[in-house]
Structure formats: C-alpha cells, structure tokens
Image 1 (cartoon, rainbow, N blue to C red):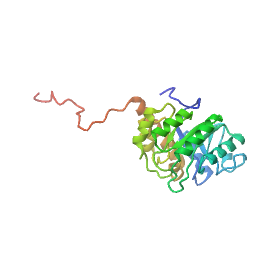
Image 2: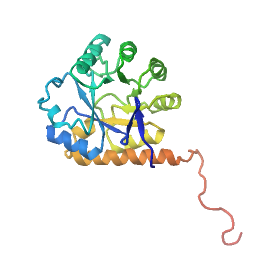
Image 3: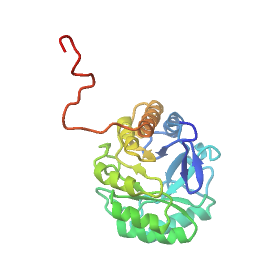
Image 4: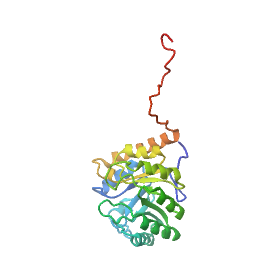
Length: 258
C-alpha cells in the first residue's frame, strides 16, 4: 500500500481520516482522539474559536505544524454568512482552505444545496480550496466539481446521529462519477461505518461525534484509524461480487464415490 496517498487541492496526505474538534469534554480528550486517529487534517468551527488569538483555549492545543487546520463554516445559514466566515479565517492568517457548511435547518442540520453551490463558486474564484459538506446528491456533487471544489463531502446520515451510511446508494453514484476526492462526512458512528465507506471507494472519511462521545477518545480514534485502513486495503485488493445464490467454495464432484 506504499504511495497510496490522498491528494486534496494539490497537497498530499498519508492519513485518510479527518477529525472534527467539536463536542469533546476537554481539550485533552480532543488531542487524545487526534493522536490516536493518526489524522493530519482537523476541522475547527469558526464560530467556536477566536481564530485571531493564538492563545485561544482550543487552538493553542493544536500543533499547526503537525495538523492542517481546516476552518469550517458550521452555523452559517446562507452563502453570505459562510463566505464571511471563510474570509475572516483567511484574514486572520489561516491557509485559504475551508470546509464549507451551510445548514439553515436547526433540527436536522441538513446542508442547503443552493446556498452551498453559490458560496462554493465565489470562494473558488477568490482562491480558496473548498471542501463542501453536502447531502448525498450526485447531481449537486457534479455541479460543485465543475465549479472547482477540491472535494465533495456527502453525509452518511445527519450530523451527530452515529447512524452510519444511510445514503450508501447515492454515495456509490457520487464515487462512480467523481473527479475529485470523495470524503464521507457526518453520521459515521463506528469504525465499521468508516470501513464500509472506504470499501465502497470513498477517498477519506471525517469523524467527530463518535470520537467525542466515547469514554476513551484516544482508543476510539485508533479504532477508526484501523477501520479506515482496512476498508481502503479491501477496496484496493478488490472485493468479490455479491450473489443471490449460494456458490460452493469447494468442488461438489470428486468426493468419495464420484
């Protein structure tokens, strides 16, 4: 599996597991999850931190030489709010990378496809590397790729639900048609969910809640790391086709009296 790197926006990563930094009970738990997971990209909600303050209680615990800090626009209700947050992060010295989230619905936190596409088109033109969080909509994914986004990030299930790949059929289509990395985001609650996404051919996954709510975030991070690696290796090795009928794994002739 050498040289099996993940390339996003022209930048190479060895880990295919991205980690979110919300919901952790403490900064110590967050760092344990990051270290256990082996991640190289961590997302940070711009509404939760003072991006201009290096002494911010959370940011001061993240080694920016080790991790790519990926600001996200969580909480933005329309394109204008998302773009404002992205520009604030860049003005504060962050790299021009942004996980674009536009979620006007406070109950299910489902992304707004129209506002997401609108913001993506403008931010790409402004030089941002845009990683958009989307519903598992293959048509929208194609439009975003045509707009120049660096990835597409379809949800497996609504944010924080830990319900796994409820959108697997649509994600399969997105993967089949993708010309940029597909990062499955949201809803992955167990390492087996991450493994399944990778077996399907996803390029990476992003996990937050499953790590944050675990009594042992470091160990859970390590478990997700193994799940991602196993799923990726199975995808590269090639899974067998499924069949409705039983197929003997041993010859049915040549035994005893044959």
